[in-house]
Image 1: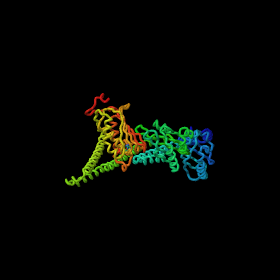
Image 2 (image 1 turned 90 degrees about the horizontal axis):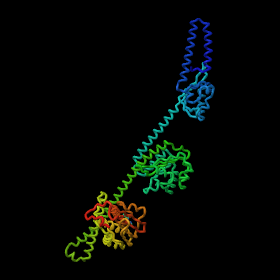
Image 3 (image 1 turned 135 degrees about the horizontal axis):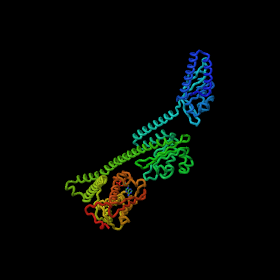
Image 4 (image 1 turned 90 degrees about the vertical axis):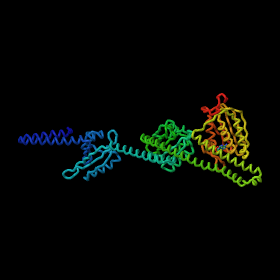
Amino acid sequence: MPFNGSDSRRLRRFRELVEETARACAPEDAAALRTELDELVDERALAEAVIDRTGALVVVLDREGYVRRWNAACARATGYSAEEMLGRSLWDLILPEERDGVRATLDALRAGRATTTHENHWIARDGQRRLVSWSNASLLDEAGEVRAIVATGLDITERTQAEVALRAQAKRLEALAEASRVFASGLDYKTTLDTVARRLCELIGDGALIRVVSPDGNWLVPVAVYHPSPERAALRRRIIAAAPQRTDEGITAGPLATGRTLRIPALSQERVRNEMKPEYWPYLEGVTSLLIAPLAQRHEVFGHITLMRDAGGAPYTADDEALLEDLAHRAAQAIENARLYSDAQNAVAARDEFLSIASHELRTPLTALRLALGNMRRVTSREALERLPPEHVERVLGAAERQGQRLEKLVAALLDVSRIHMGKLDLDLEEVELGAVVTDALAQLEDEASQTGSTLSASGTPVRGAWDRLRLSQVVTNLLSNAVKYGAGKPVEVSYGPSATGAVLVVRDQGIGISASDQPQIFERFERAVSSRNYGGLGLGLYIVRRIVEAHGGTIRVESAPGKGSTFQVELPLRPLCARPGHGALDPAAAH
Ligand code: ADP
């Protein structure tokens, strides 16, 4: 029965009165009176049941604002029972910052103004906030005065939370889709990285840093620094450029080593001081939360993206972490694509440069050859030829011959490169004595050396191996010819002999030298460390040398410094590991 205690008492009293009246009435009137009372009681019970069973919150306030009715839904939403609430005011339940709004609504209703709707939060007994959407109306008495205020509300807490979560989810999905589109269209490496950093700051905030691991794997190279405040971004760029960081130091070392994202919701200055070197303290000043995601491609970590939250902002959440991880994954792909694209562009540029150098290099001896031929044509008649001093004829023919040889060398180098490229550098192994090859090469280069003023000398102990004679001779002449070309007219020394692993050949000059940064590239195709204006050449010699040495199972390295000359050292095993013997191949024992 939905009647409360006082209602039941009143009803009992009312029934007694009706019974008294009924006894004094005619029997049909008495029966009608009792039926009417029963119907009234039924209707009242039904109305009470509806109010109590409805899922909506129903509160009735009197004119003064005290609670007169508090249905079961109100009790469920707040944890306060009807007994506790009846006769109380609502103020304690209402969120302090919303009280003014609620008061204005009640005043309007009390003044008999129109029905109103609004939303406000109730604070439940357990401290939880419930968001309720209210529809309020004032009840008037017969005189038109406000008797009570009826508020019907729907608890929309869960629905609103779900909506907020859905909206956030939609925003993230939209962000991911947009980021993928941006990443996919940005083929230029630098632009892609800048876009990645900026988009991350906009989506998650506040500052972003992207660094990639240096080719030797030891250092972190900053590639994009972003912060919405240009001054802050500039300061961070300065700090990071002035203090290079190793891959195994600082807070980033963990994510780089494990490939797992690191989230530090509350970053303490103490942690910064413990884990970062002092140069980085100003970088992280005012940063209260940190999120570091590794950049990985095919399980290989090649960099990281770090997000930094400025003081005052909320700590990074697990959702932020999931979003960053997803974006880092896409960014890694975009970066890889951009890198491949830039590599391809560099290769195309190198090839174009090579073609222009090659045509220049080929044209020089051709012009000289044409001049020599023109010279000879002018003296085609027998008498003219007889009048000409023989030294002159000899000189012209000698020059023509040299230019022809130079052309032949260039064409041979081009052929070698394409052969190596197609993997067809076959070795024709036979017993070869290294000292003899050196002596031959010295003889070939004497003219060249005398033109530059360099003297050539060789010393060593004979050493025999199973090598390709012509290819080995190419190695020695290429190294010697470079030593003469870049040797600044100073002496060039060659030494050779047995070594712990086989044979060693060293070519040393005292010329212009090679900077440390150029040294790794000079053994690549078309790579040159000098300008083609000062020194002719195709940039193929050392590439061919390296490939021949490697085909023999050997190694080549250079030690050099600008202005201090260069020393090239070749180590060769006495017989190639996977030798494919050509004609004249050796019995293994004969090599020793
Ligand atoms: P090229 O001499 O035709 O340019 P190489 O492949 O033989 O091509 O050499 C590549 C580059 O290495 C040269 O362009 C030059 O910059 C550098 N180099 C090679 N040998 C020496 C040396 N002995 N001294 C200084 N630089 C050298």
